Image 1: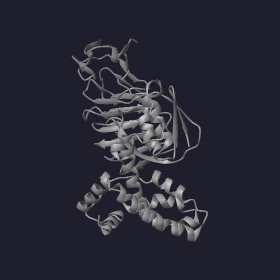
Image 2: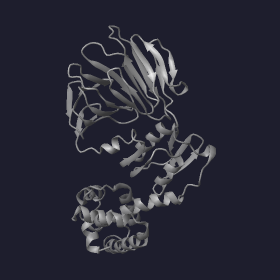
Image 3: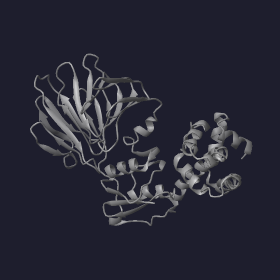
Image 4: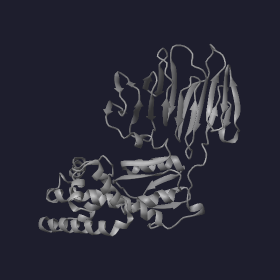
Length: 402
């Protein structure tokens, strides 16, 4: 590898073709030794700076924090990395002297760290011993969904076969070959009735087809309440937890999604709503079309790729959202992009239906992407490769510690 090309890559100063060349070189396991030597050379340089500034500087800790906080993204640039690192060092004068070397070094460190972590996990190199049987927890194999009809009858959807499940007035409720629940209206009606679809913890997502053709994907620990048929000049549903909507367009009949005092108004669009109560805020993310988010007298209009974050006091608009990260739950992935460990473990609680206890306060942020169809021990192994956190599995309980 041409060292000049590598340096230009670190400075985001090379062509797309050159970027691909460097990425391919970094991903090649045959280059591990060369990458390690390159890292060691730059590590020596930063150590020499350390020795001339502050002999008590804990550079190993700095390296660990950098590894935890700097993400690997194809479109990342050096400026963004600098902001992240300077956020850590700005109030520590001795660290400012090593900032320049760290900024350059951090990219190659993190690239190597993430790639080698994935390969080591595949080879079974980990601090967690292999767990089988009752000491491991498998991913959910079914939706475990419950459909509550207007008369209060509850249908355990995993235990019924495909075909007609119920008739609600002029609306038939069926389960198709894909396991989706489909509402179809055979004739117009003037009476309105409501059904609720609920997914407990430890569930795979399920897709629901409403009577107007709108599609709803429901995440674990979530529910959606909806009319069996939409009557009048509007369409209204309410949710708890998290759901993704692809709303059938109808300009004369707007579609509303509500949760407590928050309402999302659309005509026809694709968007995700996260209202989990154990999170600090509510998030509405737009993929296609446009939506209005309303809370009291506050309102925000979203464009594709934007997200509204609703707190107790205000509505904030965030642009340039990573939609892949937002939609990872629907697409069968875990994807964390600078996510705090406590937030990660809340997702683990819902998906695997486990109890999580923190023995130590761990404030690092993590970057990870992996398939959801893995046992919980395999997931935890990959986080342990950072050497910043460790886990113990006991029955249905996961203990988090340093």
